[in-house]
Length: 349
Image 1 (cartoon, helix red, strand yellow):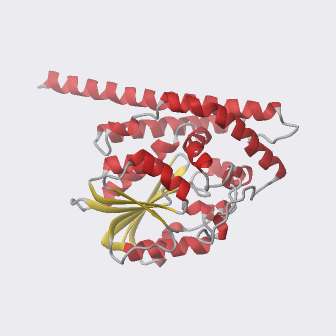
Image 2: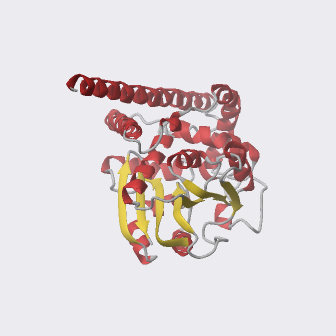
Image 3: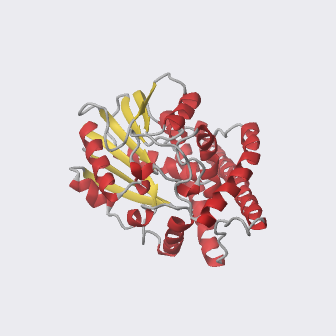
């Protein structure tokens, strides 16, 4: 028995190390791509403004330790069965490489907007889209409203976060499972699902009866539909603050990196709507950016991010008391924690 136990521990240790190595390889690839885009912008710096490249050695070391801790926790969550190893399946390397020329060109356009401080540099308009969303978040081309933007968005996010966006999002899965007593297949609503990047991991991690993928962008929803298919999924274009669903309809409402892109008044409406559509005992689960003083060493990073990547509501978000806002929207049992650059909340109706 002792030999069997020792063998099991050894195999689990090797598995954990292999998962960490895989995650680190992604971090290395995306970090290289960030520096490549930065270098390109620097070459044309007379015409564009490159993003900030962090040079503070103490801060870099702090972030590197945080990345290692995140990857180690992600690996442990897989070993513990919190979510399956299938969440690590990478995007097609061929598609990834094909995007590189498009990303290089787009990075110059983004850096040009940054230099000229252009915040609404696209023609898209729709009475069905709120004014606060009609802008170039992150100075990105077409905002959230074109096929071009949808095709590049996921890779751009991972480049920005050096391949840590996916493991950060997955930390929410663990928090949900720690706070859920529901053993039946779930009815899930994901708000601001975008191109379905988080949806892939969440749908692999929960037994669900129905999964509604909602977003305000038709282009992003179409991209999500192509990736996820229609088996078990429904796609609904809607604003998170005006949901077209019945009261008490869902067991779980998920939001990933949505709230920091909303004005404070809209955040409150989204929480109220989430409470309305949840069943009694249902959970709201939020993954979003770190906030001020969650990690004092990163306060300056948060301050600069709002400016360098045009996030008009981000600074206010970093000061927003989300736990209190959840309680004011009649949620109870509010739990929160943070990992690296992200923060998480789970609360019960």
